[in-house]
Length: 101
Image (cartoon, rainbow, N blue to C red; front, side, top):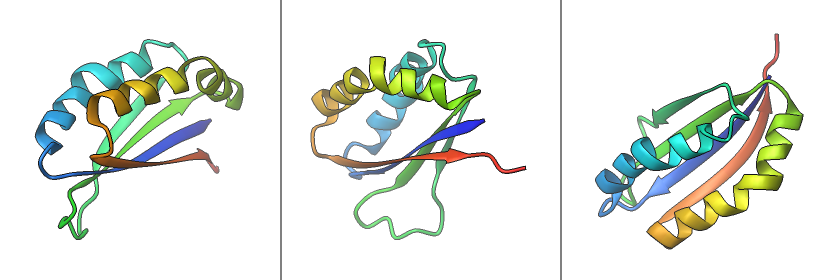
């Protein structure tokens, strides 16, 4: 299993609206691609939130091929929607992880 991990630092002024948009629009859109089996959504604790809260969304895929299909077909559109809606009021850092058993 692979995990597509997105860490986002969100400006305080948009945090409540962005959080609602994530839950109601963005995450459902990503899950609707059918390429991820589940997701987890976190808020990072014990962090300096002067510049805003930090959130983490993890999408779980059965294979790296599913992740690569998402990146190839959907990621640019999803990222553009994020930028169009919120501009530079957040910073996103993306990583790919693999479960170790």
